[in-house]
Amino acid sequence: MNYISTRSTDETTYTSPEVILYGIAPDGGLFFPCKNVAFHSGFLKAIKKMPYYKRASAVLSYYLDDFEGDCLTESCKKAYSKSKFPLTPAPVSFVGRDCYLELYHGPTCAFKDLALQLMPRLLSMSIEKTATPCNAKILVATSGDTGKAALEGFKDVERVEITVFYPKDGVSEIQKKQMQTQKGKNVTVYGVDGNFDDCQTAVKAVFTSEKAIEALAENKKFFSSANSINFGRLVPQVAYYVSALADMNLSEGEKVNITVPTGNFGNILAAYMAKKAGMPIGKLICASNKNNVLTDFFNTGVYDKRREFYVTASPSMDILVSSNLERLLFLACGSNKTTEYMKSLKQNGFFSVDKDTLSLLQEDFEAFYADDRQAFEKIKEVYEKSNYLMDTHTAVASCGADMYKEKTGDQSRMLIVSTASPYKFAPDVCKALGLPVKDGFTACDELSTYTGTPIPKQINTVRTAKQRFTESISVSQIKSVAVK
Ligand SMILES: *Cc1c(COP(=O)(O)O)cnc(C)c1O
Image (cartoon, rainbow, N blue to C red):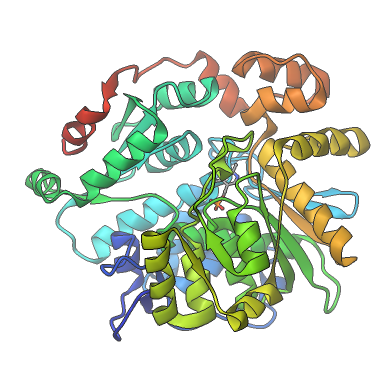
């Protein structure tokens, strides 16, 4: 399979190892397969009896055919082993007529683990395959979730090092502890005296600084990124949708709708890729929190980031520029228009797609949003009615799913993507249930006592683990520690 940039003006194509190594195309676009991938008929049936890692490698082999089948299977086996995912990596829970795809049973209790346990192995193999003489240095600016998931994924992976920067007063108690206690010989973590934007801006500046790139090259390393614009993070996500459909025992001709709590548009794009590859998926419902720029986009065709930014109880969805939307635009209207739209977004803060493109997108997508109050009510309602506990992000999706059903009367089964453990956002989940609100770990105790569910081991071990990285630095020091 060859890949092309979403902003390409010529016929230049890239192999899958190149795509994973570069992360972003030289013209600033994102990589996407040149041809539509189509799973063979009977694919769902064929994978039904397989363990998760074999399902995943079967899906991967369609997109990453430059890697021999064996090395993909081996990577998936290590990434999705029992030691990383004590349950199966992507179980489906049946709650009334809805199904919840639980993607939070990995090392950091959030869905990013599914991609980040595998992607570093793909990167490591890509370095070998392209005979790159240097090792990769991953820089991550994080507001919490991504940093920890990346650290866990990259720890002790050959030929890669990772350095994470987080705002020292801008992450939750649990998140801070998760990062400060990180193990692994190739990891470094810094708290930064600044907010998330300061960290992100500084890291982006390092990535593009010629001086920094040179300094790093002297140490025989090159910069690379772990964020969700890398195609290597997208393919592992296609796999869990396919796996869920295999587990749902669909009847002949049945189609499933899927609701995804959306931030950067990576997760829902993976669901769309599964649909394009022939999976029996009906509508994709894009659920947002109060930062509802995507809801407006799918309803009006105008993407306008010139609006207030809200800090919500679903922080991993607090985003105004959803990078992966670019790939959807590319599929809908090609690289020329996509380039134009992205340029307008950068220069003017908005873009507006034409009527035909909007109609095309609306055939596959619907979009809704829910604020914190609605999400909290949903947590309480579903818990009291069905004894099913969900986190604040999943609750936004659950709201979106119900809004869709109400609007359309569509009776198809609904798969709701559950992106984080309720324990990861315990203080807000307690608040939603009307329990006394306490901080981090104490809220976990409260939640566990009230619901009779255990605190995940991954969170409990962090509680007593030894703190390794307590050093904090100023924003201006980011550059010098990044090139080490
Ligand atoms: C990252 C994240 C999301 C958003 O996923 P995207 O792929 O960025 O749309 C939703 N929920 C949780 C818990 C996350 O960590």
